[in-house]
Image (cartoon, rainbow, N blue to C red; front, side):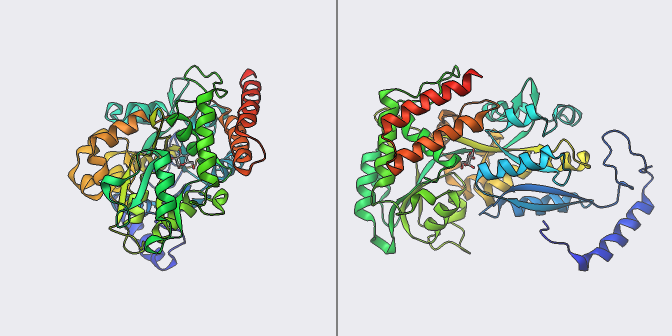
Length: 435
Ligand code: GLC
């Protein structure tokens, strides 16, 4: 993987590719439809792959393996903002300008409908057919999340679901909090133990991650924002109860005083620096917090389902998939890379080094994967993934999300009561969905 040009290697690579092309019998000067447009099939092509910051070694290892098995394709990594909303906006700007600078992107599960409709990414059906990709090997929910209008716009890389992490040296496995009340109590009591500064860390900044945290509280108490039919269902006693619990936790002295600036990045840092007893984060945290090179708590990482409300424990469904910029100049190479990342070999590397939960189901029986990430071998974890709560699928999802972000933030800041926030969300969401 290159984030900079390896000038010193260039002469070697060039003479190597000249030698290779001399041996080639392919007529590669043609620029047929779907051709990469590069002179010489054996000439090295560089594609740009963009995704948010990866705090694990997953991406680097995956790119390294791809480049090794595809000596004619170099992958240049473009790090995008890790806040999914900011990342989304950067792509929208680039793709609206028809930029071909980026070839392959990772897409959040909440984007495909919008990106397909706007024509930012290309349908992959032709490639999938040509290469006989076995779609039945994928988790069907994750696969469906990448479909829109009967076409496959991306292939799923990993599934995310919210989890509770804890310090095994401070919390015994049989005492891990089972309910949100219990979590709050223990977080307050244990804060300060073992050099910690916080009891609990969550994502409470006004951004998409807050929507995920809110969905988890709301669903744990039996509430919803929007129902399965796509209708607004936010104004209910259950949703109010769930949001009140979120506000109670976010305002408590168990969490950092500036928790409303916390995204996943700050949360991961606090945990691996040994600053917090409990943490809510996605599956990759296990790999990140057990990375001895950077984590102060490697080997002390416990993981459990999120605490329950009256109706049980609920995790928000997240995840990422890979798609190809419609204006790429290298569709063939972009597809080769996408196929590798989303295929069994790439996903296995990412599961082991990145802690990411695979979308190819047979990898949950792979002993190397389970050894690196024992949670993946746990049937309850797999069931938890299936039960995770999705966000509404709509081309205008960002607008719906923004309404939730604003009013949940207002409730945390005390600018609105939870009842007022819920009323406002109900009205504003109904207006958006009417359009
Ligand atoms: C994770 C999830 C993604 C979600 C984001 C929110 O990256 O995979 O679906 O939107 O977190 O911060």
